[in-house]
Image 1: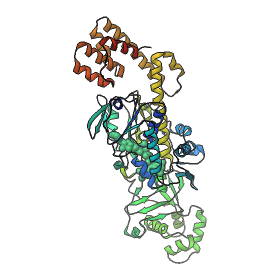
Image 2 (image 1 turned 90 degrees about the vertical axis):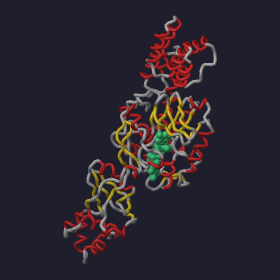
Image 3 (image 1 turned 135 degrees about the horizontal axis):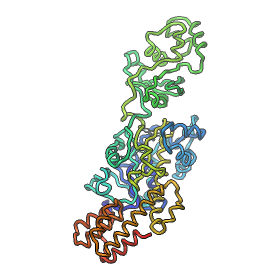
Image 4 (image 1 turned 90 degrees about the horizontal axis):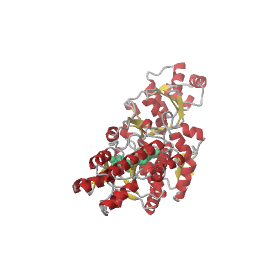
Amino acid sequence: MPPSPRDETPDALVIGAGPAGLMAAEELARAGRSVVIADAMPSPARKFLMAGKSGLNLTKVEDPDRFRAAYGEGAGPVPALVEAFGPAEIASWAEGLDQPLFTGSTGRVFPVAMKASPLLRAWLARLDKAGVILRRRWRWTGWHEGTCFETPEGARTLHPHVTILALGGASWRRLGSDGAWVPWLREAGVTVHAFRPANAGLGIDWSPHMAPHHGTPVKGVALDAGGTRHRGEFVVSATGLEGGGIYAVSRAVRDGADLYLDLKPDWPVERVEERLATARGAIGNRLRKGLRLDPVATALLMEFGRPVPRGSGLAALVKRLPVRHAGLAPLDAAISSAGGVAWESVDPSLMLRARPGAFVAGEMLDWEAPTGGYLLTACLATGRHAGRAAAAYLEAQKAARKDPRSLEQSAFPEVDPQIITRRHAMHETLRAAIDKLDAGDWEAAHEASQADPGPEAAWLHAHLHRVEGDEANAAYWYRRAGRDPFPGTVEEERAALRDAVSA
Ligand SMILES: Cc1cc2nc3c(=O)[nH]c(=O)nc-3n(C[C@H](O)[C@H](O)[C@H](O)COP(=O)(O)OP(=O)(O)OC[C@H]3O[C@@H](n4cnc5c(N)ncnc54)[C@H](O)[C@@H]3O)c2cc1C
């Protein structure tokens, strides 16, 4: 369906139909705003659907301090945002979409359906009912004279009042999040830290002895890296080690820590030594009979420990086996990515400081977390926050036009009052410009209209060219202002303009 003029100047444009973008759209629609979501892919939320292939681990029930701590250092406001919208809120949100959940023995929370498609279907239907328009195959190509897209119908430019960027990280590019936006944001003055793999497997050039174990899970071991210890399972693959246990240490390994396995984590080294000393036969036999190591754990010990020492050296190796690897798997193969839009580039409402009116949510922000439901929780929580903040920003702008004192009582304190105050000052400049135009000083009014990148200044600019009789230029500036040419007389338009910038 071709877009209508209303779609081209929505209150809110959400770019990226992953969980962060859909959540932001829902909040904006709930606030009564017209919302268009644009996504480059033929269908929305492909990574969310992929997450559903392993059951869709939505969140995790655990001690709130531990939950927040999973985001580690450098996660900006994410721990606070998941406190506001965390496991309990996500459970009631999913249940509100008629998706019953269950909590596994480790606290991980999944839909009973163990997939993402029923939840996504219900969510998209609810958004559709709320009037949200979803544009598929609309690829954002940057900010030029508006917010520009490549679409199946050709190039399109939108002029939304607020924008939410929810473009995802930079892994699994084939699902849509390709990080192509990084240079455009940098050009706009936004700091974007380079993307690096998070929750990634380890590359290992195995000897032929390991071939019989490819595809075998390794259970009941502990992993040590960078001074932290994790119990977790992983799998020996043809190219290395994969799975939750490895992902849990991949941040430390990426940052340079050595990785060790403890093959008997519940036994002290003395016990291992004693059992090895009393067991008989070749090393393989003693490991199997004395320690009850399974074949894959024994094979790992032989692979990484060769030449295998005897006596106490062997016991020490069982307890601290160094893993020789070729580094983390490439970014594209990682479950998620670290890096992205730097925290200093957004204000507490997640609005870009360099681009007032544009908010950021989801994995494209610079945070990381292990698997276990922390990723989707943070994407949903940041999407919700950005959506609410964008709705509050629209409200605050409207109220400030009527009464500048309203800024002191903002219902959403995270919206930076300074930005609204700057807008307010711009309106004063524009009012003075209209006065000059009334007094016949077209040049001075034109100069003022060029000093401000906002939509009201673009409207004044269009009006000035209309007065001058330059229709082509006026049409261009109406587009930049995100509005159709004014249908009334020049005098009526001047009055409407004055109204729009009046306190
Ligand atoms: C195999 C796999 C399994 C996972 N399992 C889990 C799990 O069980 N639990 C968990 O918590 N997390 C899981 N994750 C991670 C989780 O899916 C992501 O963290 C989450 O989807 C990120 O959400 P997002 O909305 O920020 O971005 P995304 O879901 O990546 O969505 C971004 C959207 O932006 C669109 N886009 C990008 N660039 C443009 C552009 N220029 N123009 C228009 N649109 C654009 C993309 O097409 C995409 O639809 C898994 C990830 C993978 C790869």
